[in-house]
Image (cartoon, rainbow over all chains, first blue to last red; front, top):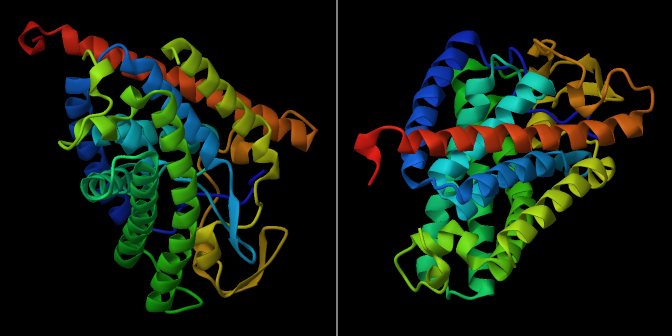
Length: 233
Length: 115
C-alpha cells in the first residue's frame, strides 16, 4: 500500500519546463515507436505486454532504503534487457501514462517529465550500460546478472538526475539549498538503484535460464550468441 | 519452457506481486518525495508544518476511483489495495498487448516496409 508513493506531482516543476519536456518526450516516444516497429514481430507482442504489466506491478512494491525512506523499481533497465531500448522505453511509457491517468500517481501536467526520466532516460542509459557490461563480463548467468545489476543502478541514478535537471530549470528549492537537494536526491537513488539492481538481475537471469531467446540483451550484442540457435526471427 | 507456459507463469507472478506482495510494500515516502519533504514536518503523510518544496504540489488533476492505488467505493482498505493492483495489472497487460499488437500489425500494412 503506497498512499505516499508518487512520481513528480502537480506544480513542483513549473508549466513552461513541464511543457518543454512534454514536447521532447513526445518526439522521443515517437522515435521509439518508429524504431520499435522495425523489430516487432507477432511473437514479441504478448511478451512485451507481460513485461509492461510486470513493471506496473513491480512499481507498486516500495522497499525501504533508509529510515523513513522507500524506493520502487522503475523498470527501465529490465525492459531494455528483455526487449531492447526502443520497445522497452514504450513499455515503461505505457506504465507511467496509466499511473498518471488512472491511479493519480504522477501529475498529468508532469507526464512529460516523468516519461522523460523513468521511461526514456532510465531505459536508454540502462541499455547502454548493459551493452558495455556484456562486452566485458563472461556470458554466464552471473555475468548477465552482474551486467543487469550495474545497468539498473546507473539507470536509476540517471533518471533521478533527470529530475534534478528539471527541478533546476523549473522548480523552487524550499527548506534547503538546491545543491543539498540535488545531492540528497542522487544519493538516495544510489540506494534505490541497488534495490532495482537486485530485482532486475533476478528477473533477467530467471528469464534467461527459462528462455534465453527471450532476453534481447543476449541476442542483440555482437559477442557470443548462446541463445541465437532457437531464434527464427 | 514453452512460450505459453512462460506467459502464464509471468502473468501469475505479476498478479501475486500486484495483489498480494504489494500489501507489504513500504508506506514511507519514496526517494524523491522524502527529499522534497525536507524542511517540513509530517504526520500520517500530511504536511503539518515547516517549509519544503513539496508544499508547492497541488492535488492530482484527475484523482479518480483508483487514486493512490485504492478503490474509492470499497470500505476495506486492504481489499481495495489488492483489487486496485490486480485490476491495474490486468488493464496494463491488456492495454500494452493491444497497443503493441497494433504496432506490429501496422508494420506489415504498408507494402514499402515489408521485407
